[in-house]
Image 1: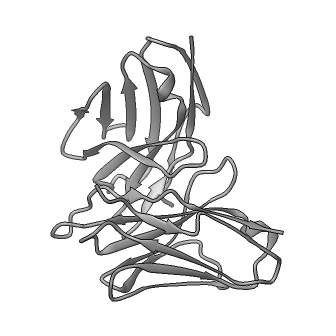
Image 2: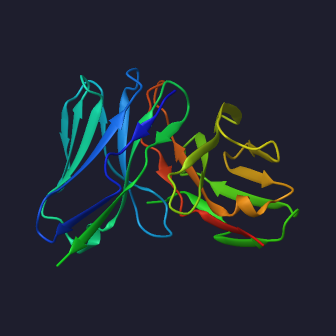
Length: 111
Length: 115
């Protein structure tokens, strides 16, 4: 069945370093992907998205890379800050009216 | 900018009681999604509505039902509550443009505790 998953459950980085969070998906028909950030007790917050006709998309301090050949997504956060500490989810729009979430990665930023 | 509004934010119910969760989407968004998130889990899709009609269904128990009203707000009705129903319930909304998926925006969630 469809599935979206992440390789690492927890990522610890030093403040100022770059962070890379990875995600694998299995549905080759998926054409739209979103990264969400979720802080404790809050709803998922949209960070950045990418469509399958793109390989890379950049936002403010964040970059998403899409490798359709190996069905892999990554989220890169530049100059990671303490406020970036949260759980990050990749999510996939299948060809149905639902957004499928992968297992989250907890990002911990230490001074 | 207006966001997705969910009410109540917190709800405590006893086993076998009934709960109703409400979701008010972003203005002009016609699609609503409900998700359930247990502690340390990823959000699990329950059900979605487009233009007041159910559009997709996930792992929603038969004890739960939902609908979208003429003003596009949605309600999730949960009956015969069980301890395992304790979770965060999120609603999200989007406005698919010409059948193209767009970003879904989430509310702050309702924390349901069943005791």
